[in-house]
Length: 232
Image (cartoon, rainbow, N blue to C red; front, side):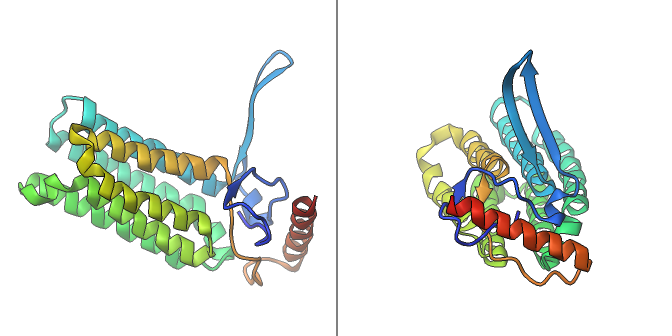
């Protein structure tokens, strides 16, 4: 979601003045018991992608850690789920990345996910012991690369931080004993859910060729409103 670069925090409370591309498919949640609000929040399509992948990553690695399911069954099941999630990711993000001129970033994430699944499946089905020994570092490394690409594409310190967390996670794994899958799932899952719940920094608005003049004017007004919120 586009915010002013003067926003001081790398990650902070979400701003309500969203651009046109962020409002498309916006999901608002409010859970109440009577007049008591238990939870209230909103999630853009980008946030929804973070939640989707966060739950999937946590599920995959926690299953590998705790459930007595064969590697072959897990490989098939998670490969199918990853393929479906990748398609959903493209569908949810496509309008936003077209507006922000970041289609290459989606291609990059798709390539990383497909490449990771291919290496994982070959390691399992072809009995590549080295791959099986380093599945956790593999996925933390691929995810870190994706975050670095994202940080560069949107000029975001938040994604640079996430890349650093995942790279440091690789060095942490040898000290986790038999809990490497759980630790990997927690690092990947919590990072994604945090990105969905918080406001992350991003470059200043660009000249959105993909939008109509009316939509561009709306974005300019929203940008001014965000600047007022930051100053206050």
